[in-house]
Length: 173
Image (tube, rainbow, N blue to C red; front, side, top):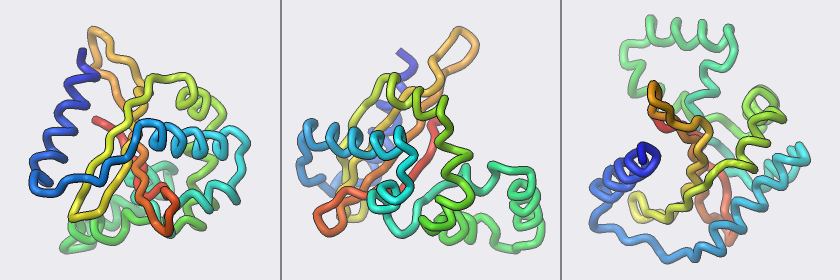
């Protein structure tokens, strides 16, 4: 029940912001194929294929704080940059794919996490932002309990040159 509330909230936010923009219809079959192809690269740890399936930069907040050194760097950034929030969300959060593969890929896509992505419930959403069509794949990675609302990882794909490419990796909440 909580999972559906989170998804509904997400859809309302995206829908409210983009009420006048209708996505180009993407079939469920196509969305599932995009996810299956992406998962196959993760399961085999094929970073060459992962790079081919990714945009040149991946929006990834978790990448900014997934090691003690990066946490310290982010804290220093917040303490020293006057307009840190804007800089964080307009520039710093976008990780070049080669840097992502070198520094973040193995930290995020562990054997256990990839197994969780394969086995967990998946929801597919097609939406548009500023006239750009996206596929969003939401995977429940933390089941809700009596004491926790649960959580999802989201993987957003954008179509470039007839190929759906990962351009965002985030979490809800």
